[in-house]
Image 1: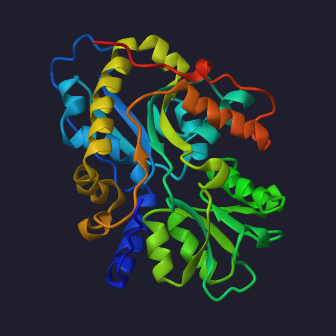
Image 2 (image 1 turned 120 degrees about the vertical axis):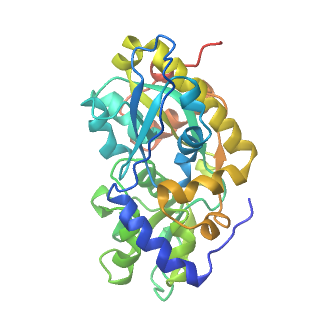
Image 3 (image 1 turned 180 degrees about the horizontal axis):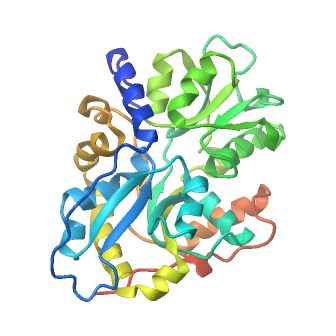
Length: 329
């Protein structure tokens, strides 16, 4: 996939706006149809991240896909899947966008019982990278990560596993204590002032931080993690059982949005400024991953098997236990 970069004039506004967004100030609402088609629950709160992975939910809101199904959907900006999961378990959120590493780990540890109701996002080249200061000669590849402090958005998630995998290929074993959790918008400053030695980031932060003097050290979604499934839409197992019509309506609306995101980049560009608060010019140039249109057992089993390989799961994990595929109709 072709890499595109932000111009310097865009950087300050992008990072300032994203910092505000990460504090949870970008909730969005849509009004449901009065006819709810017998839905058990019509008002849903969905936890998302201020990154491109979440675009389909905003598309579904803006295009009226949820409204057509009798649903009112509100979004809540979260720091990461690992921090959003307890809110899902507590019922504060009805659904979340969660990276699969955090999800499967939480399921194995008994944090809760979850269902993936739709796939969302898959990695593409240079979408999730490790960066360091451009003038830091001590870090030029994953082979240099031994003992270094590495910023990630949350612990025990796709970020930490991606860095661990990249380092392992280079012959380096990462100590979990090397990871420093912080919101994505804070990482550029932490890198600049030396709080951390490297950062793991996604777009639009990759392009923004490159303009602030950061260099790419590695594409962490290459080699063993090439085309890796990143995240999906998740609900509590109990919620799915008690609200089958609501879940089916949510899936139908989201399926339309995922299809649109997969086929029309403009649809993504239009919504990114609405839940990330970045401007249209920035949205038009960032590199994007692949938006999934099917829920594949084989694809997600790859995630579980890779997690076992890198020590993120203690035992074998059959992903069928967490899949809730859409029904026809």
